[in-house]
Image 1 (spheres, one colour):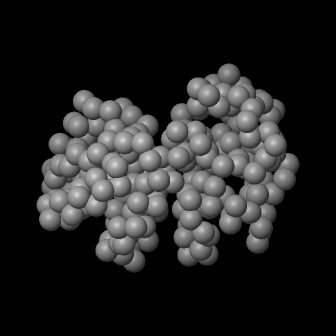
Image 2 (cartoon, rainbow, N blue to C red):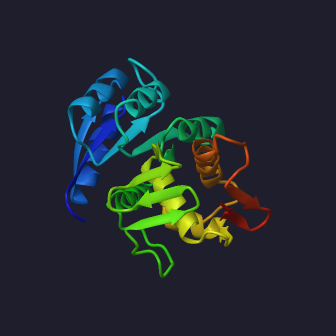
Length: 233
């Protein structure tokens, strides 16, 4: 993996030191800070491939920091949450996190999540479709410029996170066909699907809100019970 610079925002200094050492061994550069407001300032002033953000922070909470970050940057954010606290995970995803990982975690799983996110942001996501190499995709009033990572709907620019862009691309390339949750989980999040993992459903919900037609409230992304989702423009 090419060298990337990550920002780690966590007030557990010992954990930060351990993760910095581990990630450096994986050819990743790491900067760490231990305060929510300081982390937001670093994102504003610097350029990072990924932010790893803890929920419990001094200065401001991880949720508040994420909201501030999203006002100025679409940098991918991986949130660290308390194990078993599903509410924290869902809230994090709803306000702009790309993925989450529950503490305590295996460092190998952290690396896997980071690699999956970086693949998405580099535009190297794998999509099983003969049209996956298209530079521009148009379906109905939706247009996706793949190289520029730009989406417009009826001429209106839609701001999407890296996860949302990849998710929409997969659905649009398979417009009219059901894409299973298993396929979406593997292609978008880089991991196997679990019925207890609601990440894809939360990202779909956010996409629906952003793509909802101004003239009516019909959904262009429809759920197919027991199977997955279909882009049905």
